[in-house]
Amino acid sequence: MATATPGPAVGTAGSGARGALLGWATIVALVICRAGVAFFGTLVVAALLPVATSWQGYAVTSGSMEPHVSVGDVVLGRPMAPADDVALGRVFVFEDPADPSASRLLVHRVVDRHQGGRWVTAGDANADFDVEPAPRAAFLARAVVLVPLVGHPVNWWRDGRLGPLVVGGVAGGVALGIALTVRPPGTGGGGGGSVRHGRRRRTTSLRRSAAALPMVALAVTLVTAPALATASSAFTANTRNPGNSWAVGDVGLQPYNSAVVADTPYLYYYLDEASGPALADSSGNGRHGTAAAVAGYRRAGALPNNPGYSVDLAGGGRVVSGGTAWANPTTFSLELWFRTTSTAGGKLIGFESGTGSSSVSYDRHVTINTAGRLVFGDWTASPYRTITSPNRYNDGAWHHLVLAAVPQGSSQLGASMYVDGQLVASGVSSRVASYSGWWRVGQGRTASGLVTGFPGGVDQVAVYSSALPAGRVQAHYAAR
Image: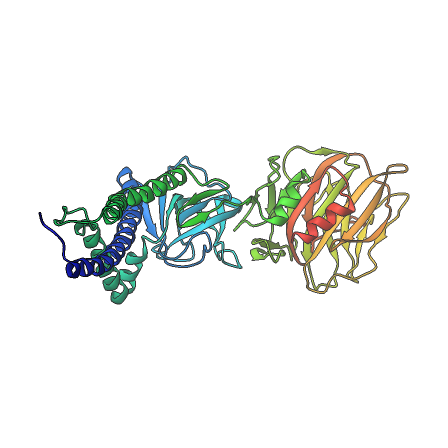
């Protein structure tokens, strides 16, 4: 019968403790390496597999979409078909319209619709909108899946940063080698000699833990994959993946545009066109306008936080509404932004029976007099009564005008005049005639029948078939 001597027993206990410590260190290293390989392998597969279905992967090179999209992430885009819409609030891959070579791609969110089929875009982390609106033809793909981190090697290679590329490659190779070749302690065969019952139980427990390592790595993969699969359907209000979150906010129109549209305008002209004569109606009512003799298009816009342009009407330019004639409007609101430095006065907005340079009937207009004050009611009528702003507005700054009118007395109008969100004048106007006509901005007939224009810039023209209350006027101005 073999017996164990006291000396070897002590030595075996010491070496066993060191072996157990080394075994657990090996297990921890294997967990890290196998989980890392499984995690990044899943991401690489997720980034490359959709490409086989004609999707395209794009490595993100700047932080303009942070925190939702970071440098080194890979955006998988579904190519745009000719019939696909450019949806507001979604993220797209498109050619930078400000780059004449069309070689620079942007991954930005669409935040508004411009006139003429162009779209305003912006990076989530940028304070300003992109300089140039993008035409429909520039959109290449709609972002569908966001895979974090995988694009870093692409960026390192593109930037010539060989250091991180080599270190990352070596570290990845070492981790892959350990994951594939190193076996957990106790899984390569049993040992000889006598052991005590307690040590045998600990060894068996260690072997079971080591055998569970592949399952741990597999669990990481299984947890990662469904998250990516969920994101691959489409970006919704809360699409998430393991490394990041790409949320589509409640982005629709710009704040000011949203405020206007919420009050159901009769017509609404952004005045963002690059040229005339056609002007798009953004109210949804199809009352597209016509421009004539406009001195300049795409001048600087009036709204500081809403990208867009204005028109210069100096020299007799006019904007005339489209659609069928409106019969005898008695409840309405007129809204626009204007600026001028002129002391010549002129017609801002009003109602006329014709669409040409001269009309038979004309009234319901707001003019600016030679002193720079706004006047409503200055047309030939009896009784003749005007409402005039106490302040002057020919200071060269942009000003927001709203004139809200309701029936008052014998064919007269009770009017409230707001400038820059504040009520500045109110009262009863001159008598108005009953006829059908169209609204116009700029050149037209005034009190004495003279044809005058507006010597300045105009932006964001809207007309309503209701009288806007003070709260809505203030909301519009606040959304500027």
